[in-house]
Amino acid sequence: MICKLCYCSEFINIDSDIGDYEYESSFGYSYLKCANCGLYLIDPLPDSNTLEKAYSGTYHAYNHQPSKFAQYLKKKYWQSKIKRCLTFVAKDASILDIGCSLGDFLFELRERGFKNIQGIEYKKEVADIARARWLDVLNGSTEDVKFKKIITI
Ligand SMILES: [Zn+2]
Image (cartoon, rainbow, N blue to C red; front, side):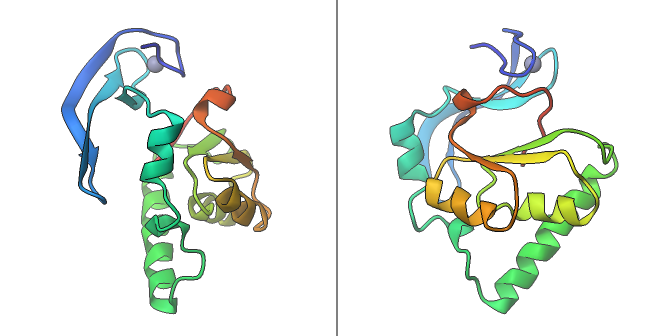
């Protein structure tokens, strides 16, 4: 395995045999941290069949018409994440949200003045919804893009 950010091949094992907490499925992945740049990733990276199973049409983040209360909770959630980010990320930073779903994080970043923001979303129909919000969202996987800086959540 090679780090997609700095191309280092040395990793620190954070956890092993992890699965998806939402669907309680065990995939046997390891959670690694790049010893050079600190990027966190899972190993092995899931293939397209695995992504398709994990991000089905019922995946909670794909609900683009939540109740008003759910909208309120989502906004509070993203505001909290951004407040943390603001302590270590400059507003002119390049930010790529991997698996950005409907673009809620990007939307909140844009509301706070971040301009160099982009998302990548695996599901085309979900990426289309994010793009309808005038967000710069690519449809594809991390294999499809090269990037310099990453913040993902
Ligand atoms: Zn790295």
